Every structure is written in C-alpha cells, then in structure tokens.
Length: 370
Ligand code: GTR
Image (cartoon, rainbow, N blue to C red; front, side, top):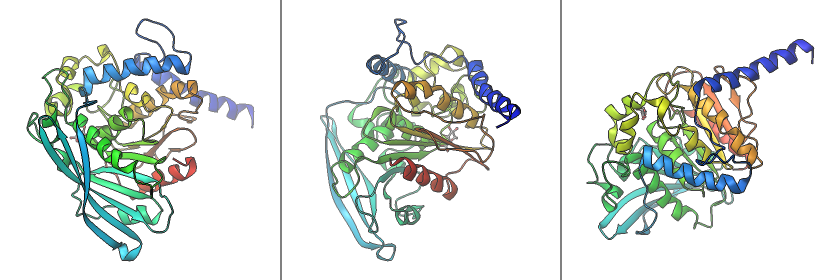
C-alpha cells in the first residue's frame, strides 16, 4: 500500500473521531465518582449506574419482580409455506396482584434446520400479515413475531391497558410504552429460552423505528439476547441526542410523551445537559452483538448520529475483549460494516425495514454465529 493511501485511510478514520468529539457526550468508562473504568469488573459497576440513569431519566423503571406468566398454544399450522415450516400462535398470559393481561405471538420454525436461531420480531402489522416470514424461515431462522399494538395500544392511555396496568407508575419515572413493549418482549423470551427445539443461545431481538427503540431497550435490559437489531431507531433509540439532526427530545415529548417516562420532558431543548446520551443504551448490550441500520434519506432518524453511537460504545466492547464497530470512515450510502460485534449499514433510500435490510441482518448472523 502506498504512502498516499495510508495517509488517506488515517484521515478517514480520524474524521470519525473528530465527528464524535464534536458531540461532547458523557463518558461511558468512568464511574459517577470519577473512577476510571478499566476492567470488566468495574464495567459491571458502571453498567448498573447506566441501567439506573436510563430508566430514571428516559424510559422509566421496568418491573423486576411480582408477576407470573403462562403460555398457551391457541392455534397450530403444521404445513406453513407449503410444508417448509410449522407455525404456532401462542398466547402469553401475565398476572400480577392487580390483575391479568394477555397477548398473542406467532412462532414460525423452518423444517430445513435443526435448532434454528431465532428472530424475536416486534412489528407494526398484525399477525395475519405475512411480512418477511417465509424468506426468513427459508434462510434457516425461526421467527417469533408479535404485533406491538396487541401488547398495548400506541396511545396516551396512561396505565389503563396492557401490561402497564399490572404495574402502574408515576408521572416522573413510571415506565412509558417503549418500556411496556420491551418488557413484554422479555416475557416472550421467557418462553423461547425454554424451547429446546430452538438455538436458545442465538436469539436476536429486532424492531424498526419506534420498535427499533423498543428492541434496543429490550436488548439493553435483558442480557439473554445474543444480538440486538435496532433498525432506523433514531431519537430515543440508537441515535445520539447531542448534535442530532431531525427529531429532538422536544419533538418526542410533544408528539409521543407516553413512549418515555415523564422525566424526559426536563431535557427538552437541553440535550447538552442530559446526564446520559443514547450510547448508554447501546453500551448495555456489550459484549453481545449490536446491529444498527440506517437509511441515507432518513434525516429524521439521522443515521450519522446512530453510527456515532456505535463508534462511541466501541471502547466498552474492547474492554470486554471484543471488537466493537469496525469502520474505516464515516458512513457513505451503501456502506456495510459487518466485521465487529457492532454491525452497521447505511442503505440507500428512506425510512423503511425491507428485504435488503433483512438480507444483511441474516448475513451478519451467519457470519458471527449469533
Ligand atoms: C415517527 C417518530 C419517530 C419514529 C417513527 C416510527 O413519527 O417521530 O421517532 O419512531 O415515528 O416509529 O415510525
């Protein structure tokens, strides 16, 4: 390699560092008492702090105890997709001292693969819509799919409906709908990890947009997922708030106050003062795999801010003995960074989760065995 290209490479890498420095985000590898975090043991302590800050200031506290869950298969299709897969619809029933709620999910398992890895996919569309399931199962993955509105309506209805009603919170740090959806995914995970026909070591959680935020929160809180895929999750998802284009804290709090906890409102217009930024959520996934997908024309989500969060968590991965994001330059349309435990791609086009994204997610999983 010539001197000139070495220099070009170094400049391209340096551009990432410079862009990230401009954001002035809070440090990950320092405890609140200022102790530098330089070992996996100290990271555990820092992890607890981050876990606490994110719940208190952004998403609200998710319940940790006090419920019972049961699951019942309510429908079965032995020969789905012309016999290539079987499908089960399973009802999740959750009970606490305050009552009982339920929602369905659908598990599609390919017959061509022994112990398939799984995508736990939270979707906008109802379970009756086919979505990408046939293509995913043809690729040897099982899919557990849940429609987010079946868990709890996407409305400002307080704690009236869905799992929120089992654990109503307060107006400050009570859980918002993202928390409710994310926590409910973990109740599906409780079922999946017991299912011996599946590869329970390779269960990914995936969602797009508001459901990308949900998937990130779920995978940040629940360490049983081997991979977390946040597609175009933007503000309140994988994108840094500081220096972000498009949607800001004030937009989220005006349009969707009920997605988050009440405390987030304090930070509207004050991103620079936030005691966290979204790389905190991404860092909780380490050392497990994290994949952030962006689209070049999705300014509202801001893929550069998503990319920079991936870069920002890389030192945590390195501390834990993994490569984080392996990228040699700021992302250009069409770039795919699949080398490290943090994956990223920048698809051409607008806000959407489609077959081009799925193809890359499946490639990444096969490459990393997660
Ligand atoms: C938008 C919202 C985004 C994103 C998106 C979606 O209106 O501003 O944060 O969540 O909805 O979920 O489709």
